[in-house]
Length: 168
Image (tube, rainbow, N blue to C red; front, side, top):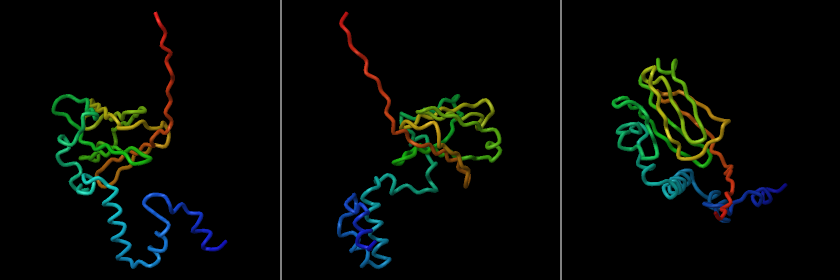
C-alpha cells in the first residue's frame, strides 16, 4: 500500500484537521509543531482549565465546589475533592493527608455518585454527586503523589421509557 493511500484512510477532515494539515506538519520544525499544538490547546480548552495550576488544584476547594456536588458530612468535617469529566471518563480526585487513610477507606459508587467512607474518621461518610452517568464496570482507583484518583467510564447508554398519558 502506498503512503498516499495511508494518508487517505486517516480521517484528516475531522476537527481540528483539514486536508492541508499533513503537508503543513511535514514542513514544520519541532518548535513550530509545539507552537501549533499549544495554539490548538488554547482554542479547545476553557480559560479556567488553562489557568489552573496543578499544584493549587485543591486550594480553596470549598469555593470551587458547585451546587451539584454534595458533601454529606457533619459540620466541620469536610472532605476536599475535585470532580471533572473528559470525553470518555469521569474523575474524582481526593487529596490524602495521611497515608493511614488508605488502609481504611472504602469507595462505592452508583451510576451518578461516589460514596467515600472511613475518611478521615472511621465514622465519616461522604457522598459526591457526579456530573454524568457512569458505567458499572471499568472503574479504577489509584494513589500517587498524595492524591487518590477515582476514574470511571462514562455510560453512553441512555435508557429511557415512554409513559403513556391517559385521560381520567
